[in-house]
Image (tube, rainbow, N blue to C red; front, side, top):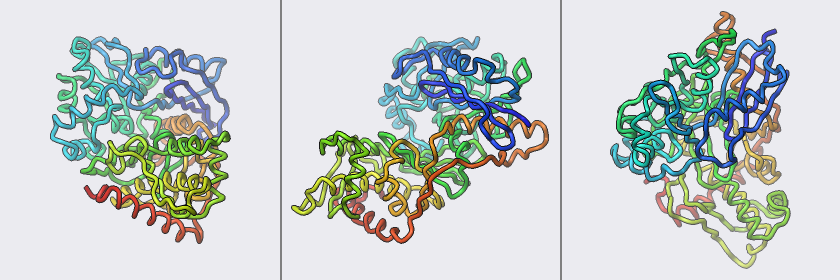
Length: 480
């Protein structure tokens, strides 16, 4: 029996799972928080190493043959010619580059030009926008930048003893804004456009390639970003989509090719298994539920809102909530506000407003899913992630509104599990027992499964009511 480890260095903690290479069964686990401020936007990467060391203490990695690394996405680790840190790393929650992102869009010829070049339009979080921000606000530091890494790249490099060769994977590279999932190549001209000069970029490894061996003889796999690692940990395949329910939302699906969307609604990520993960983001998801619960004065929060919603009927007695509370990305309505429509005396009851909030959130995410379906992406099964996925109202409404089977996985460290699965894959390929085209067949995630059944017609009617209201208030929002 072989043993591998997967570590996930998230924004606030490190999780490590030690797994059996054949089944994926978790044998041991480790956890440690990062010694940083919870909402820090600038971080000394040594904090990630300290957390990793603490999580791996007590002989956790004893007997491990290979390690996979998953880490927070969109971080920027700028290094000088000697490999020293130029300044603290900028992490994904840093929004100071919003103006820089808009600046880059204009400088390169607009949204469509970016979508065609690298499959995405610059956003504040992405490394390409952070480089532009650095060049504009800290020109002396920017001038010293000779190599650009992301958090998982930097951690892999450290585990390998800081070799001359620096690597990344296609999943993490696809989120930079200067690597194209469609062509599989960097766009150095976009790095120069952002930073003002060229900088070295890490070599992009294939899904089953190893980044190298540690001095102690441990194989280190390519690693990847948290989103791609979680997809690998969940065992996603063609026909699967993931709907993530946070304050904002996202819909991603496994697809056989990169998708370039001239409107910029689709971000063309690559996955960690040789396929693609096109993603569509919404600015609003659970924040619409929380706002509704507060408006109704519900002390029980989302759980009480869910119970209240289930006392209403499909269509919420004609109430429609367009949940665009923070503007919206899908459709592109950055300066709009949310709308409650269909008020009549009979609809003005708390249970109808509660139901309208759930229907509005899910219909908005179904709109995002339709952006992918409209480009030929098949969706037969929808994985719901996030604490709100456990709410009975979400589980009752989602299958019919999405028109697909809904799977709610049990909570687990899926990013760390995906990193471990990648490590087992690279180890198996190096030993000649696995194909570089197919990851090891580990047991899938334990989950609750909900079928749309006969309710699918009801879900279509709810979506038609929502779509008619959206089109009336924002005509052509998805065709512009």
